[in-house]
Image 1 (spheres, one colour):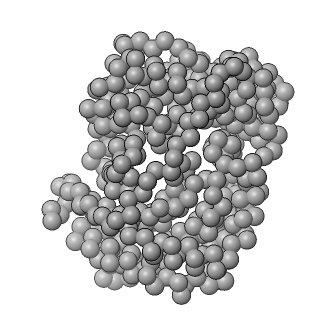
Image 2: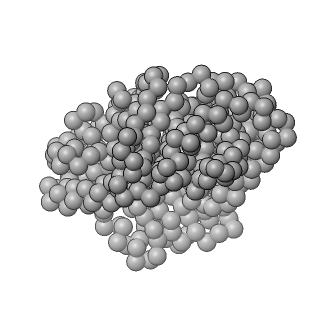
Image 3: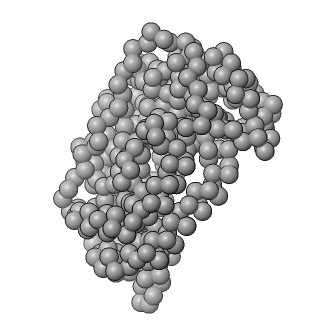
Length: 399
Protein backbone atom coordinates (compact mmCIF):
# COMPACT_ATOMS: atom_id res chain seq x y z
CA UNK A 1 0.00 0.00 0.00
CA UNK A 2 1.28 3.44 -0.87
CA UNK A 3 2.91 5.51 1.89
CA UNK A 4 1.75 3.31 4.75
CA UNK A 5 2.73 4.85 8.08
CA UNK A 6 2.93 3.26 11.52
CA UNK A 7 3.02 6.19 13.92
CA UNK A 8 3.77 6.36 17.62
CA UNK A 9 0.14 6.03 18.66
CA UNK A 10 0.24 2.42 17.40
CA UNK A 11 -2.74 3.04 15.13
CA UNK A 12 -2.09 1.81 11.62
CA UNK A 13 -2.42 4.66 9.14
CA UNK A 14 -2.24 5.02 5.40
CA UNK A 15 -1.90 8.16 3.31
CA UNK A 16 -2.93 8.17 -0.36
CA UNK A 17 -1.69 11.44 -1.97
CA UNK A 18 -3.92 13.44 -4.30
CA UNK A 19 -2.17 16.75 -4.94
CA UNK A 20 -4.56 18.10 -7.56
CA UNK A 21 -7.41 18.89 -5.19
CA UNK A 22 -8.26 21.44 -2.53
CA UNK A 23 -10.02 18.88 -0.34
CA UNK A 24 -9.11 16.10 2.05
CA UNK A 25 -10.89 12.94 3.18
CA UNK A 26 -10.05 11.26 6.47
CA UNK A 27 -11.56 7.93 7.53
CA UNK A 28 -11.26 6.29 10.93
CA UNK A 29 -12.49 2.69 10.66
CA UNK A 30 -12.54 0.01 13.34
CA UNK A 31 -13.58 -3.53 14.14
CA UNK A 32 -16.52 -2.37 16.21
CA UNK A 33 -19.50 -3.03 13.95
CA UNK A 34 -22.68 -4.79 14.98
CA UNK A 35 -21.20 -8.26 14.34
CA UNK A 36 -18.99 -7.65 17.40
CA UNK A 37 -22.01 -7.38 19.71
CA UNK A 38 -22.88 -10.06 22.23
CA UNK A 39 -26.58 -11.00 22.63
CA UNK A 40 -27.10 -8.47 25.44
CA UNK A 41 -25.31 -5.74 23.47
CA UNK A 42 -27.42 -5.69 20.28
CA UNK A 43 -27.67 -2.07 19.17
CA UNK A 44 -24.65 -0.92 21.19
CA UNK A 45 -22.34 -0.48 18.17
CA UNK A 46 -24.72 1.96 16.48
CA UNK A 47 -25.44 3.77 19.74
CA UNK A 48 -21.72 4.24 20.43
CA UNK A 49 -21.27 5.65 16.92
CA UNK A 50 -24.09 8.18 17.51
CA UNK A 51 -22.68 9.27 20.86
CA UNK A 52 -19.06 9.45 19.70
CA UNK A 53 -19.82 11.43 16.54
CA UNK A 54 -21.80 13.94 18.61
CA UNK A 55 -18.81 15.91 19.90
CA UNK A 56 -17.72 19.56 20.05
CA UNK A 57 -15.56 19.38 16.93
CA UNK A 58 -18.53 18.40 14.75
CA UNK A 59 -19.90 21.93 15.26
CA UNK A 60 -16.53 23.47 14.40
CA UNK A 61 -16.34 21.45 11.19
CA UNK A 62 -19.89 22.30 10.22
CA UNK A 63 -19.17 26.02 10.52
CA UNK A 64 -16.25 25.84 8.10
CA UNK A 65 -18.23 23.84 5.53
CA UNK A 66 -16.85 20.40 6.29
CA UNK A 67 -18.92 17.22 6.44
CA UNK A 68 -18.44 14.83 9.34
CA UNK A 69 -20.50 11.82 10.37
CA UNK A 70 -20.39 8.19 11.42
CA UNK A 71 -21.62 4.96 9.85
CA UNK A 72 -22.08 1.60 11.54
CA UNK A 73 -22.06 -1.48 9.33
CA UNK A 74 -22.11 -5.13 10.28
CA UNK A 75 -18.34 -5.35 9.78
CA UNK A 76 -17.09 -2.08 11.15
CA UNK A 77 -17.69 1.41 12.43
CA UNK A 78 -16.58 4.33 10.29
CA UNK A 79 -16.09 7.99 11.19
CA UNK A 80 -15.30 10.22 8.24
CA UNK A 81 -14.55 13.84 7.46
CA UNK A 82 -14.62 15.65 4.13
CA UNK A 83 -12.96 19.06 4.47
CA UNK A 84 -10.94 21.75 2.77
CA UNK A 85 -7.21 21.13 3.11
CA UNK A 86 -6.72 24.11 5.46
CA UNK A 87 -9.08 22.48 8.00
CA UNK A 88 -7.02 19.33 8.42
CA UNK A 89 -6.33 19.87 12.13
CA UNK A 90 -10.02 20.24 12.98
CA UNK A 91 -10.70 17.08 10.96
CA UNK A 92 -8.12 15.00 12.84
CA UNK A 93 -9.27 16.48 16.17
CA UNK A 94 -12.84 15.41 15.40
CA UNK A 95 -11.77 11.83 14.67
CA UNK A 96 -9.67 11.81 17.83
CA UNK A 97 -12.72 12.79 19.88
CA UNK A 98 -14.80 10.08 18.20
CA UNK A 99 -12.20 7.50 19.15
CA UNK A 100 -11.30 8.48 22.71
CA UNK A 101 -12.88 6.84 25.69
CA UNK A 102 -15.25 9.29 27.34
CA UNK A 103 -18.00 9.21 29.88
CA UNK A 104 -21.42 8.97 28.28
CA UNK A 105 -24.45 10.34 30.07
CA UNK A 106 -27.91 8.85 30.44
CA UNK A 107 -29.38 12.08 29.05
CA UNK A 108 -27.34 11.76 25.86
CA UNK A 109 -28.16 8.08 25.49
CA UNK A 110 -31.87 8.73 25.91
CA UNK A 111 -31.72 11.49 23.28
CA UNK A 112 -29.96 9.29 20.72
CA UNK A 113 -32.16 6.34 21.63
CA UNK A 114 -35.12 8.25 20.22
CA UNK A 115 -33.16 9.28 17.12
CA UNK A 116 -32.23 5.67 16.40
CA UNK A 117 -35.82 4.51 16.93
CA UNK A 118 -36.94 7.07 14.37
CA UNK A 119 -34.28 5.83 11.93
CA UNK A 120 -35.67 2.31 12.25
CA UNK A 121 -39.26 3.47 11.81
CA UNK A 122 -38.31 5.59 8.81
CA UNK A 123 -37.30 2.57 6.75
CA UNK A 124 -39.71 0.00 8.20
CA UNK A 125 -42.11 0.35 5.27
CA UNK A 126 -39.58 0.99 2.50
CA UNK A 127 -39.24 -2.29 0.55
CA UNK A 128 -35.87 -1.45 -1.04
CA UNK A 129 -34.35 -0.99 2.43
CA UNK A 130 -36.34 -3.64 4.24
CA UNK A 131 -35.54 -6.49 1.86
CA UNK A 132 -31.81 -6.19 2.50
CA UNK A 133 -32.29 -6.12 6.25
CA UNK A 134 -34.76 -9.00 6.43
CA UNK A 135 -32.84 -11.27 4.05
CA UNK A 136 -30.12 -11.71 6.68
CA UNK A 137 -32.64 -13.58 8.85
CA UNK A 138 -32.66 -16.45 6.36
CA UNK A 139 -28.95 -16.49 5.62
CA UNK A 140 -27.57 -16.29 9.15
CA UNK A 141 -30.27 -17.56 11.55
CA UNK A 142 -27.74 -18.39 14.31
CA UNK A 143 -25.69 -15.21 14.11
CA UNK A 144 -25.92 -11.62 15.29
CA UNK A 145 -26.44 -10.84 11.59
CA UNK A 146 -30.05 -12.02 11.72
CA UNK A 147 -31.09 -8.85 13.57
CA UNK A 148 -31.26 -5.39 12.06
CA UNK A 149 -27.85 -3.78 11.93
CA UNK A 150 -29.07 -1.09 14.34
CA UNK A 151 -31.01 -3.57 16.50
CA UNK A 152 -34.80 -3.55 16.68
CA UNK A 153 -36.93 -1.17 18.74
CA UNK A 154 -37.07 -3.40 21.83
CA UNK A 155 -33.31 -3.97 21.76
CA UNK A 156 -32.62 -0.24 21.49
CA UNK A 157 -34.95 0.42 24.41
CA UNK A 158 -33.12 -2.18 26.52
CA UNK A 159 -29.65 -0.62 26.11
CA UNK A 160 -28.19 0.69 29.35
CA UNK A 161 -25.47 3.24 30.04
CA UNK A 162 -23.17 0.46 31.30
CA UNK A 163 -23.71 -1.76 28.25
CA UNK A 164 -22.93 1.05 25.83
CA UNK A 165 -19.89 2.28 27.79
CA UNK A 166 -18.49 -1.23 28.16
CA UNK A 167 -18.87 -1.91 24.44
CA UNK A 168 -16.77 1.13 23.57
CA UNK A 169 -14.13 0.39 26.19
CA UNK A 170 -13.79 -3.20 24.95
CA UNK A 171 -13.67 -2.55 21.22
CA UNK A 172 -12.17 0.92 20.76
CA UNK A 173 -8.50 0.02 21.14
CA UNK A 174 -5.63 0.92 18.82
CA UNK A 175 -5.12 -2.57 17.40
CA UNK A 176 -8.74 -2.59 16.19
CA UNK A 177 -8.63 0.72 14.29
CA UNK A 178 -7.00 2.23 11.21
CA UNK A 179 -6.84 5.72 9.70
CA UNK A 180 -6.88 6.36 5.96
CA UNK A 181 -6.39 9.82 4.48
CA UNK A 182 -6.47 11.05 0.90
CA UNK A 183 -6.24 14.47 -0.70
CA UNK A 184 -3.87 17.41 -0.70
CA UNK A 185 -2.16 16.59 2.59
CA UNK A 186 1.42 16.83 3.79
CA UNK A 187 2.37 13.41 5.12
CA UNK A 188 4.52 14.71 7.99
CA UNK A 189 1.84 17.16 9.12
CA UNK A 190 -0.77 14.40 9.10
CA UNK A 191 1.45 12.12 11.17
CA UNK A 192 2.07 14.81 13.79
CA UNK A 193 -1.63 15.60 14.07
CA UNK A 194 -2.56 11.94 14.53
CA UNK A 195 0.01 11.67 17.30
CA UNK A 196 -1.33 14.86 18.88
CA UNK A 197 -5.02 13.93 18.94
CA UNK A 198 -4.95 10.15 19.37
CA UNK A 199 -3.96 8.59 22.69
CA UNK A 200 -0.83 6.48 22.89
CA UNK A 201 -1.71 2.96 24.04
CA UNK A 202 1.43 0.92 23.49
CA UNK A 203 0.66 -1.31 26.46
CA UNK A 204 -2.98 -1.86 25.60
CA UNK A 205 -3.86 -5.54 25.25
CA UNK A 206 -4.28 -6.57 21.63
CA UNK A 207 -7.70 -8.16 21.85
CA UNK A 208 -8.48 -10.37 18.88
CA UNK A 209 -11.87 -9.05 17.87
CA UNK A 210 -11.92 -10.98 14.60
CA UNK A 211 -15.13 -12.89 14.19
CA UNK A 212 -15.47 -16.41 12.77
CA UNK A 213 -17.09 -16.66 9.35
CA UNK A 214 -20.81 -16.57 10.18
CA UNK A 215 -22.44 -19.94 9.65
CA UNK A 216 -24.52 -19.84 6.47
CA UNK A 217 -27.73 -21.88 6.53
CA UNK A 218 -27.40 -24.33 3.60
CA UNK A 219 -31.07 -25.28 3.33
CA UNK A 220 -33.50 -23.74 0.86
CA UNK A 221 -35.66 -21.05 2.45
CA UNK A 222 -38.12 -18.48 1.20
CA UNK A 223 -39.93 -15.79 3.15
CA UNK A 224 -42.82 -13.68 1.91
CA UNK A 225 -43.27 -10.30 3.57
CA UNK A 226 -46.54 -8.47 2.99
CA UNK A 227 -46.62 -4.68 2.82
CA UNK A 228 -50.14 -3.65 1.76
CA UNK A 229 -48.96 -0.29 0.40
CA UNK A 230 -46.23 -1.79 -1.81
CA UNK A 231 -46.82 -0.93 -5.47
CA UNK A 232 -44.17 -3.40 -6.69
CA UNK A 233 -42.96 -6.87 -5.78
CA UNK A 234 -39.34 -7.05 -4.66
CA UNK A 235 -37.40 -10.32 -4.95
CA UNK A 236 -33.94 -11.04 -3.55
CA UNK A 237 -31.84 -14.19 -4.01
CA UNK A 238 -28.81 -14.65 -1.74
CA UNK A 239 -25.85 -17.03 -1.91
CA UNK A 240 -22.62 -17.14 0.15
CA UNK A 241 -19.53 -15.48 -1.33
CA UNK A 242 -16.09 -14.33 -0.13
CA UNK A 243 -14.41 -12.04 2.34
CA UNK A 244 -12.33 -9.03 1.30
CA UNK A 245 -9.11 -10.98 1.87
CA UNK A 246 -10.09 -13.90 -0.43
CA UNK A 247 -8.74 -13.76 -4.00
CA UNK A 248 -11.69 -15.79 -5.27
CA UNK A 249 -13.80 -12.66 -4.93
CA UNK A 250 -12.54 -11.30 -8.28
CA UNK A 251 -14.15 -14.09 -10.34
CA UNK A 252 -17.29 -13.73 -8.21
CA UNK A 253 -17.35 -10.00 -8.93
CA UNK A 254 -17.10 -10.51 -12.69
CA UNK A 255 -19.71 -13.27 -12.64
CA UNK A 256 -22.10 -10.90 -10.87
CA UNK A 257 -21.55 -8.23 -13.52
CA UNK A 258 -21.99 -10.65 -16.42
CA UNK A 259 -25.10 -12.27 -14.95
CA UNK A 260 -26.47 -8.81 -14.17
CA UNK A 261 -25.94 -7.72 -17.78
CA UNK A 262 -27.73 -10.84 -19.00
CA UNK A 263 -30.70 -10.65 -16.63
CA UNK A 264 -31.20 -6.95 -17.31
CA UNK A 265 -31.91 -7.86 -20.94
CA UNK A 266 -33.98 -10.97 -20.18
CA UNK A 267 -36.15 -9.17 -17.64
CA UNK A 268 -37.22 -6.54 -20.14
CA UNK A 269 -38.63 -9.07 -22.59
CA UNK A 270 -42.43 -9.53 -22.54
CA UNK A 271 -44.37 -10.77 -20.70
CA UNK A 272 -42.00 -9.94 -17.80
CA UNK A 273 -41.27 -6.24 -17.37
CA UNK A 274 -38.90 -5.43 -14.50
CA UNK A 275 -38.48 -1.95 -13.10
CA UNK A 276 -35.03 -2.81 -11.73
CA UNK A 277 -32.59 -5.73 -11.85
CA UNK A 278 -29.19 -5.95 -10.18
CA UNK A 279 -26.65 -8.62 -9.31
CA UNK A 280 -24.09 -7.73 -6.66
CA UNK A 281 -21.00 -9.43 -5.27
CA UNK A 282 -20.40 -8.11 -1.75
CA UNK A 283 -17.10 -8.85 -0.03
CA UNK A 284 -17.09 -7.82 3.61
CA UNK A 285 -14.58 -8.13 6.40
CA UNK A 286 -16.19 -11.22 7.93
CA UNK A 287 -18.51 -12.60 5.23
CA UNK A 288 -19.46 -12.26 1.58
CA UNK A 289 -22.70 -12.41 -0.39
CA UNK A 290 -23.76 -12.92 -3.99
CA UNK A 291 -27.18 -11.31 -4.37
CA UNK A 292 -29.74 -10.91 -7.14
CA UNK A 293 -32.48 -8.28 -6.78
CA UNK A 294 -35.47 -7.54 -8.99
CA UNK A 295 -38.46 -5.21 -8.74
CA UNK A 296 -41.58 -5.65 -10.87
CA UNK A 297 -45.37 -5.61 -10.62
CA UNK A 298 -46.86 -7.49 -7.67
CA UNK A 299 -48.49 -9.99 -10.02
CA UNK A 300 -45.13 -10.89 -11.59
CA UNK A 301 -43.24 -11.92 -8.45
CA UNK A 302 -43.35 -15.65 -9.22
CA UNK A 303 -42.37 -15.04 -12.84
CA UNK A 304 -39.34 -13.13 -11.63
CA UNK A 305 -38.33 -15.99 -9.32
CA UNK A 306 -38.68 -18.49 -12.15
CA UNK A 307 -36.64 -16.28 -14.49
CA UNK A 308 -33.79 -15.95 -11.99
CA UNK A 309 -33.68 -19.73 -11.53
CA UNK A 310 -33.62 -20.16 -15.31
CA UNK A 311 -30.98 -17.47 -15.77
CA UNK A 312 -28.61 -19.10 -13.27
CA UNK A 313 -29.18 -22.62 -14.62
CA UNK A 314 -28.53 -21.69 -18.26
CA UNK A 315 -25.83 -19.07 -17.85
CA UNK A 316 -22.73 -21.17 -18.60
CA UNK A 317 -23.19 -20.73 -22.37
CA UNK A 318 -22.93 -16.95 -21.95
CA UNK A 319 -19.50 -17.10 -20.31
CA UNK A 320 -17.41 -16.37 -23.39
CA UNK A 321 -14.05 -14.61 -23.86
CA UNK A 322 -15.86 -11.64 -25.42
CA UNK A 323 -18.43 -11.25 -22.64
CA UNK A 324 -15.73 -11.66 -20.00
CA UNK A 325 -13.56 -9.00 -21.64
CA UNK A 326 -16.51 -6.61 -21.68
CA UNK A 327 -17.23 -7.29 -18.00
CA UNK A 328 -13.59 -6.64 -17.10
CA UNK A 329 -13.62 -3.30 -18.90
CA UNK A 330 -16.87 -2.30 -17.16
CA UNK A 331 -15.59 -3.29 -13.71
CA UNK A 332 -12.23 -1.54 -14.15
CA UNK A 333 -13.77 1.61 -15.62
CA UNK A 334 -16.29 1.88 -12.77
CA UNK A 335 -13.52 1.38 -10.22
CA UNK A 336 -11.27 4.05 -11.77
CA UNK A 337 -14.09 6.57 -12.19
CA UNK A 338 -14.92 6.26 -8.49
CA UNK A 339 -11.28 6.17 -7.41
CA UNK A 340 -10.82 9.72 -8.70
CA UNK A 341 -12.57 10.92 -5.54
CA UNK A 342 -10.44 11.33 -2.39
CA UNK A 343 -13.35 10.11 -0.25
CA UNK A 344 -13.56 6.86 -2.22
CA UNK A 345 -9.80 6.34 -1.93
CA UNK A 346 -9.90 6.81 1.83
CA UNK A 347 -12.92 4.53 2.19
CA UNK A 348 -11.38 1.83 0.00
CA UNK A 349 -8.04 1.76 1.77
CA UNK A 350 -9.45 2.01 5.30
CA UNK A 351 -11.43 -1.17 4.61
CA UNK A 352 -8.53 -2.91 2.86
CA UNK A 353 -6.05 -2.01 5.61
CA UNK A 354 -8.41 -3.30 8.30
CA UNK A 355 -9.57 -6.53 6.66
CA UNK A 356 -7.35 -7.22 3.65
CA UNK A 357 -3.92 -8.78 3.20
CA UNK A 358 -0.56 -7.03 2.89
CA UNK A 359 -0.35 -7.73 -0.84
CA UNK A 360 -3.70 -6.15 -1.64
CA UNK A 361 -3.61 -2.65 -3.15
CA UNK A 362 -5.83 -1.10 -5.78
CA UNK A 363 -3.25 -1.98 -8.45
CA UNK A 364 -3.12 -5.58 -7.23
CA UNK A 365 -6.90 -5.86 -7.33
CA UNK A 366 -7.14 -4.40 -10.84
CA UNK A 367 -4.47 -6.86 -11.97
CA UNK A 368 -6.37 -9.81 -10.47
CA UNK A 369 -9.58 -8.72 -12.22
CA UNK A 370 -7.69 -8.57 -15.53
CA UNK A 371 -6.26 -12.05 -15.01
CA UNK A 372 -9.61 -13.82 -14.43
CA UNK A 373 -10.35 -16.54 -16.98
CA UNK A 374 -13.56 -18.05 -18.35
CA UNK A 375 -12.60 -21.28 -16.54
CA UNK A 376 -12.55 -19.48 -13.18
CA UNK A 377 -15.96 -17.94 -13.84
CA UNK A 378 -17.40 -21.29 -14.91
CA UNK A 379 -16.21 -22.84 -11.64
CA UNK A 380 -17.70 -19.93 -9.72
CA UNK A 381 -21.03 -20.35 -11.53
CA UNK A 382 -21.09 -24.07 -10.67
CA UNK A 383 -20.51 -23.17 -7.03
CA UNK A 384 -23.49 -20.81 -7.08
CA UNK A 385 -25.63 -23.40 -8.87
CA UNK A 386 -24.82 -25.99 -6.18
CA UNK A 387 -26.11 -23.77 -3.38
CA UNK A 388 -29.76 -23.69 -2.39
CA UNK A 389 -30.73 -20.02 -2.44
CA UNK A 390 -32.38 -17.92 0.19
CA UNK A 391 -35.27 -15.98 -1.35
CA UNK A 392 -36.97 -12.97 0.19
CA UNK A 393 -40.11 -11.56 -1.43
CA UNK A 394 -41.85 -8.31 -0.49
CA UNK A 395 -45.19 -7.53 -2.10
CA UNK A 396 -48.79 -6.65 -1.27
CA UNK A 397 -49.95 -10.22 -1.95
CA UNK A 398 -50.77 -12.38 1.05
CA UNK A 399 -50.09 -15.99 0.12
